[in-house]
Amino acid sequence: MVAARRIGWVAALLAIALLAQAATRIPQIDGKGIQKELAKRKGKVVVLNLWATWCPPCRQEFPGLVKLYDKYRNRGVDVIVVSVDDVEDEAKVAEFLRQQKAKMPAFIKKPGDSEKFINAVDRDWPGAIPYTVVYDRNGKPFAKLLGDHTFAQFEATVKKALAKRK
Figure 1 (cartoon, rainbow, N blue to C red):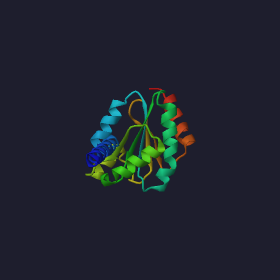
Figure 2 (cartoon, rainbow, N blue to C red):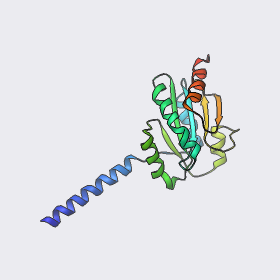
Figure 3 (tube, one colour):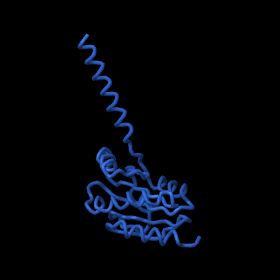
Figure 4 (cartoon, one colour):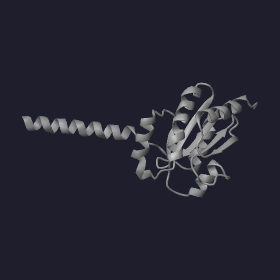
């Protein structure tokens, strides 16, 4: 009887662990996916940030992106973050996002042709991170920010993009 209860508890805990793992899945995205995400948001200012868990400047600027999303998500601005970590490190990415309380759309780069991915984001992007592109309401690049930036810098750029006439 006791053994049966233990087996039941172990099975329940295993099921909970599997559900938790499934809940933290981060969708993979490629260049075409980036373009689709941007197209879905036409009419909004979009902040697209490329980062990685192993990148200290990326980790440093991330709280500013979370704050930007929280402050502007209902004001015509969307923030999308794309991790360029290896897909095998998805758990690290998910944990970092959880620690940051990041609620914005988040993706991890799908393995494959990095050149096509780079060109989908910005043909001029050298591939270094952190890299942020702010798109205007028409889906056109408004600003390109290489290196880490503060919330104030992101906010100033977003305000200019919002003020731009269509």
